[in-house]
Every structure is written in structure tokens, then in C-alpha cells.
Image (cartoon, rainbow, N blue to C red; front, side, top):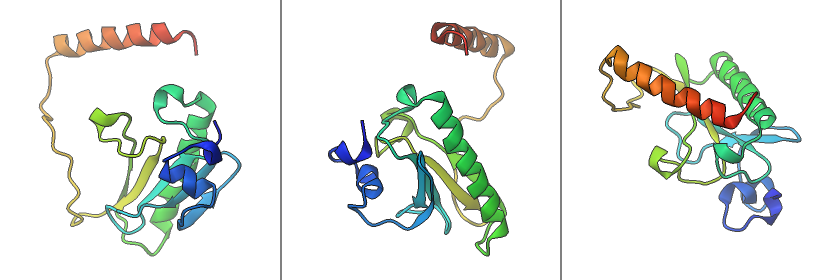
Length: 148
């Protein structure tokens, strides 16, 4: 599905030129622009130009292109005059993962010690049996995807 033909997607509207955006980078596959609700100054999004709602539908090659562009932007942040002591990349896939716009997008944003961005979780070290069990399940999921 082309971006211009997708109803009610703000990112498709940006790709189609129907909504404003502060464009950072574009090629024939992806578009990068500034996030309107930035974690820090310099926070940008990298999206496929075609409407792809989630990772399940994202082709491998396009995923690689999203990351390639995000990697370049992360390196550019370090060379910019923006406050940047480190960089986070963040991709939320699905409502449970806090995805709000259902058009695949990769956040790239500069970090610094006093920026107040935090991810709260249960970060305790897990038993090896629990990790091994999860690894078995994940290998089964990979097998279901087939070779590649």
C-alpha cells in the first residue's frame, strides 16, 4: 500500500506532503524527520515511505535500510552541536509496547546525564533455567519463520 493511499496515518500525510515536518533525510525508501514530542532536542524518527504498520509486515531489506539511516543519524548527532553524550534507538511494535502511531518508526534521540529519560523495568538477573526456556521458545519462533 502506498503512503499517499493510507487514510488516518499522520506519517503517511507527512510522506505525501499533506502535513508539515522538519525533514532531516529522505531517499526512495525512507524518510527521517524531527519528532514533534521530543525526548531531547534532536529526537528524530525514521520511517518507511510506504505504510507498514508493524514489524511483522516490514521486509528484511527495508528494516536494514531503516537501521542504516538511523545509524547514520546517531553518528550525526554526535557530530552536531546538539547536547549529546550518547544515543538511544527505540522502536515500539504493537500497542502493548507503547506504539501510538501504527506506521513502523524508529526513534533516534540524543541522551545526556541530566535528560530525565528513564525506562522502568524489573532489571534483576534471571535464573539460567528461565533464560534457557525462553531461548528454546525463541528458537521455535525463528524456525517458524523459515530460513533466512
